[in-house]
Length: 322
Image (cartoon, rainbow, N blue to C red):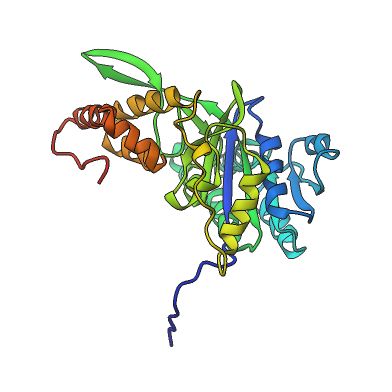
């Protein structure tokens, strides 16, 4: 087999953005606002699993609507998304992706059906996951192959865990790379790692993105101190086109140093430092350079790094800013 290499050029890159949040966090509005910025004058596609609730926004946005009903099997999602892609929509909103996991007929229900079909014995429990998991993997493969951009909305819920501190057991918000502040998207555990970028939205500040996953090349595209707007979508589309276009410049007004966000950053830095070096580094790398400089200058980052190393139980852990 002959393999050919050519200079790498960013062009026509398909992006998958995840928006997770609880009730009242602004997921649907934010997804449609972002989609409008990406699509410009063209209509975008909405795959609606929420009993036609997307139609509440028909007067505010130009989109074509398709309803997805139970059973919420992975192949049903894959078929709907590939159909929208084949129709030429520039961006596809799926609201909500969580039902593929926890909805009527979704993966959890399917696994229970398989478990009962196989006899309901503990020895068959692992086998009962085989068909649902394989179907999910096939769906993810199809998502990664579509040319359209995707916005996946996830329901999110808080999780807690028990930890020991000073010999005492405490209940604290659960930590993990796919969640933030103890809130996690309701979905199969590996799906969030396939997302280009993902954000947590909270009901007390609807639409304001808290980065779960935000790589350096995308930081200038999203404001972190105000609700997601069309400008983010416009910048996202320009970045994805890539070839012949410059990256959008960083806007100082979008810095997390802004009033109202500064306390959140410091609080999150301190929170992540208690979870160890890996968690601290993951959050630290989501911040802009100006924000990082601020917390280096005032000594807060060094304090958090020391606390993270202590949490890992060793002063020889890998530095958080490595």
